[in-house]
Length: 275
Image (tube, rainbow, N blue to C red):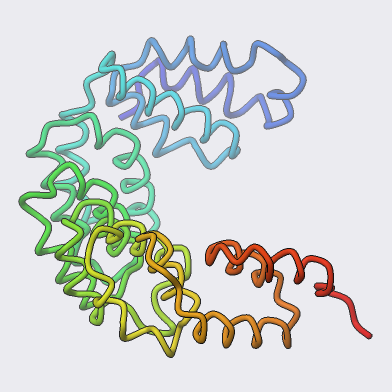
């Protein structure tokens, strides 16, 4: 609902100024924040929802203001959050995006009940961006939602869900589920490295299934456990990397602590050159 203050901001800033003013006026951010400080939570929502299409810098400035005020608790967004969550499903797609973005700036600072309502709103959505918002707050609710995150992961294969599982689930649980969450094509390499690091105290036998299909990751799993790397396996990997002139050959020789082979390779293997 418009008020004299929201109308003033709309008329003075959103109608008479452009993104270029952020570059020309060094106090422009200060002026905006000063005006925002005088608004109620409902007025902040009105400004965000009705007038933010004018410029990306206005939008980012207000979102930054909202996030900081929520984190410090200097503005209580509880009532507006409850209203947005209750009305979310009634909105058009574009309005839902605006609702979701606003809520995501304030949700971490609200009560566990509101966080759970927010989580429930998005977790089973068919849209990945909705589910991502739920995954972000899952850590705050982990004891109650861990199984839901596992179920979502198996249903949607969301890497964001897997990241939460890696961060919050016990290493042994991840290790015994390894064959169900790891394949040649999934997840991406950085997540596979996180899994290797998280389960480093678990038995290497959990990784035996990748020894032949993904030997480089098996070598990494051995390395974090300070276990000896099989010479035959290492040499097969190095031979293939030499053919492809893959610079990671040096990395794996280092992991295996093969000093002589490493220094010899540094002298003889020219990565990225053609004969």
